[in-house]
View 1 (cartoon, helix red, strand yellow):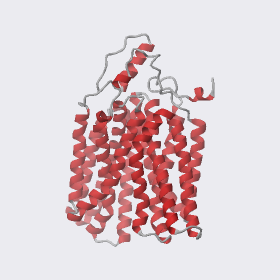
View 2: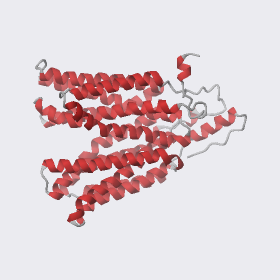
View 3: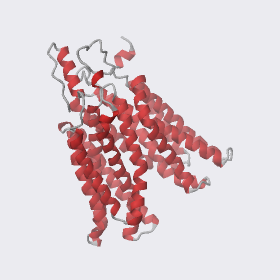
Length: 449
């Protein structure tokens, strides 16, 4: 038996064949932590660094917006590509490209500050390196989500999805901290440091994680008709739409938090930044607490039930943030922060619940495509949320939060529609049928989730 066979993981069709999955999943989670660091470190480093390099604020923002557009365009295609070349191989390629992208970003900054290249050339190289990083992220997260779907039994999948979601959230929280820490040494140290962390994660992934054996041969299971029941993209639309609405509302709130504090409490820019930072820290802390709860108890709840509860909590938090200014001025700031925390709890249930639900609707050979579609919809939400929020905020300072509250309630209603979409045999049905056949039993009839 060769190394590839030894490291091959059984799919959810064979959930008892291995018991040592925990290390592999933790390594995959670490890959997403480093990816989250790479994504968020730029937000604390680039503004001041870009100005010191002579770029305008519009040019600085173009580095991020262009890479976000690349993410939206590439995510569905890359998710499908992981079906053909393999989940783990795809993650290895993504991490290698992330190492090169971070190193190229730091080298470009160093060359421009040293006067070796022009400002225009450096801007083009910075945009190119960030686009490369976003393309890596556009494929790496769908591949990781598909890996979890391939290597977990149905009752463990919610906790598995929550693990990778919380890992990326943790990376987003650590990014600014690591950026500030490495920034003490030099303005380019954060990018070289992130490249080193990513390289270490790549080495662990290469050594410890093998390709899941998700390519089930039809010749071995002729009586289980998988391919005719394979879903088309339109059958996944409720989950894709929910992903878009959830992230749109989240980015809308995060974009407007600083503006709201500055306008509500008549603060200076520095004071507003400090209060917004505290509020968003509470939001992210609540988000991680909710995801830890999903890791511990989420397997007991259907994924769409998590989405329903999360949408209600997030709706209440969003509405509370919008109306927090109407309470006693002595407690207005505390109400804003508590509302952000309530929204974070809801968000921590919404994202893993929806991501898990789509894995049950997607065929086990199409998990990468489904995850890619979901990631693309969330990417569109990241791009459109701040634009929609600031456009409405210009007319009324409370209206954006009321609109977002209505959208979050719409997510709750979409879960009802999701259960009624004309579907196909769920992965649970396929797995139970295969298991029954292996035990010499008659397969169960098709189940429509």
